[in-house]
Length: 331
View (cartoon, one colour):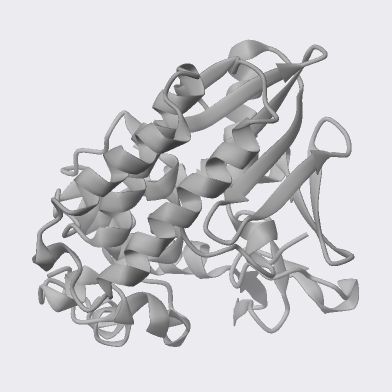
């Protein structure tokens, strides 16, 4: 099981405690201690807000929230507020745009076997050379070009061993609790094998490593949505990292648990525990709780890469959390 504050596994149960509000698992060192009770970051922030403020009833929370935005809230509630509630768009960049374009081609090839590798290569060449220079920023064009070429090459090797798909680009909206926004996922490919489902997700970026394999929400949420919609068991979920020709495979242990094995190390996800965490997150969103967690020092990399700071909409976790603490409100 993982700590709900730092998201890392709790290896020693002697060093475990629980949040007095949500009962989430915590490292004792991660718990915020007050009046003899222990709190996780989220619950403590909400508790402190409730002392001086009322729930923000003026916000317009979407009826449906994409899985990626739930991950955004986990990383920084204030970023979620600006992007989802206020509608501040992320600026385009070559990584996201090329990923979108490649996924459209992968979907076409999955549904139409006449769309062969040489066709996709020609289509990619045409699209790539149409990208404006501004899209690349400081990224080398040759690096991105090679990423696209290598991804296409690996993709065709993978699908050559697959039959006709059960579904592709399947968007699912599903509930994780009463009176909460629906969760939306889009599965790249689903195959039916011997009465069970096998899910595939095409990745054109960096390979997921370490504890993120246990804390990332994509695999368990996608499995949950597909399982609930089609009422069929999901045997495995595979991330295909096409540029590096690597995979991360989550295989079912039982109805709730899946394991990904990498170099003899095992990383577990639990469908029920993930559902509970998402319920907690969506509840905080409905309450209008978008403050940055107290442990702002852990957000250095998140802030460094955030476009909101570059746009001067957000001053960074350290300053924003100080503003919150002193009740200056949001920017």
